[in-house]
Amino acid sequence: MGFDQEGFHVHGAESHLESVMRSGDTASFRAGDCLLGMIKQGFESGCAWSIEVEGSGVVHADFKKGIYQASVRSEANFFGVNPRYATVAPFRHGVERGGRPVEELLWKAAFYGSFGRLLEGCNLFDVVELQRWPNFTRLPHSVCCLPLCSLLARRPSSIAFAHRMLRVPPGDAMRFYSAARSAGYLRVISAQPDASGPSAMLDTEEDPSGSSFSGFWTRLFGRVVGL
Image 1: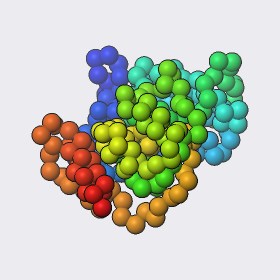
Image 2: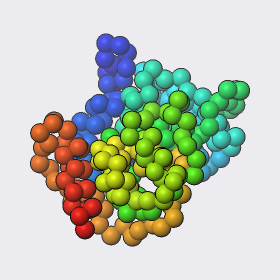
Image 3: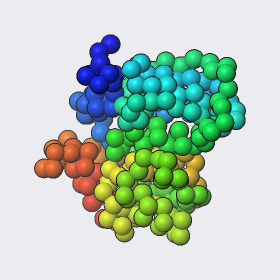
């Protein structure tokens, strides 16, 4: 395994993003494509696990107590890593006082694993409501997350509607939705059938700004909200 000059694992967020873009899978992602899958399995098991990425850090999570502690050099590198470069082992020492809620761990894993894509199982037309505000002093976020939370706390809406009303960049909206759904901050009021997800509209044309994700989502939402 190789490392860069600062000691970070080279199979981190950037290299994973490059592999995602090369594969053409720029529409949606599965939990198993990133550390979110491992963390969700631990959450469902109610056990205590350690998840380590060599050269990047380690997370100790007590899923029964619902708390975790992390010692990582770069959250983006750690949570954005391809899961095959992470190792999971039972954690028997317990998480000490000062642990953070596991919901924050789920947010981070989905936020960094999204790369502007929509988590599989979510739908642009799901009507959702914010159950409680994420602690943005502790969580990674974009400036768009605050107006999205404000809207969804006041008025249950779909992400497609929120994107149009707030003029939120599509990739940021998808990343927010993926993270908030994973962490349980959003309640689904009306789930829409997943008949034709974003991948059905995949457009590989490059965006002039240099962000192929941004160009795809802008064109996608232009079609969706016009229906």
